[in-house]
Image (tube, rainbow, N blue to C red; front, side, top):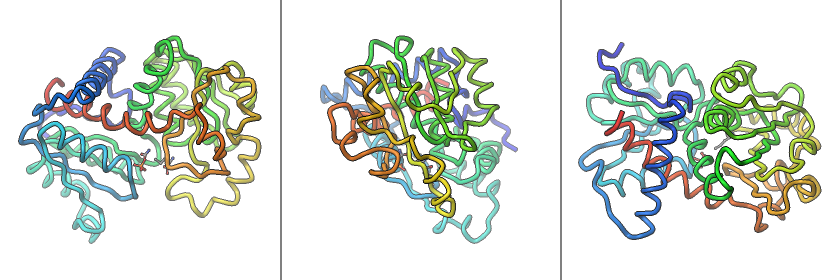
Length: 308
Ligand code: CP
Ligand code: NVA
């Protein structure tokens, strides 16, 4: 195990509410400064190692670009190119990489595998998505909700769809940020009970239901994600049947706020969890949400490497 004590970001509640606020504050500053053309070297000479067991567009490119913009560097490491793919233990990979890089990000299937990497790392470890959690997505989501509503604690948000990794981290982040959240998930695909319990200890407890129309009623923000996540391809037919009635479409949004903002972490499966019409409408704020991955992660990286 590691002899140092770096701060990790394996899920959103690795930060306190005050620390989450600091990270979001840094993110907003980096965004404003980038828009004003201000350059930074806050992570000058520092390197981020990025281990990927699953595909990625946004996570990979936003982390890599973010490190470049901060004066640092990122190394993309696919598991099939690492000795990890030939059976080198995670704990050995983690200790070796810790001797080179200043911060490590990993996108893995198994959340416990990420915890093992963190247990053996001498540098901060960041969750780039596991089957259980996607906390970097939540940072961007909170920044986006902050920008598009009267403020996080003023926002009424509905999660409609699968109780998956994105939903689980969002539930934790929403509680920490004081968001009024209602969740609608079908039977058998609920958010884990321990996640709901953790959220209830951190802030306002989410309302949990299996009624998408009731969840969306009056909501300022409606958020969904794919029904078939990476690694669940074998469950596709079963899941599509279970999610009948959970599609975010014009009918479902009829009772939401007139200026309802629709969020999706992307990639989207048009015609499944969301219609093309909704995604292409003025209600969708998904491109701001995707952009905010960059700013939120710059805030997080600097917070972990310089402030924590
Ligand atoms: N939202 C998200 O994490 O996208 P990628 O899978 O493209 O990284
Ligand atoms: N729930 C999705 C999110 C992708 C960013 C998945 O895990 O595939």
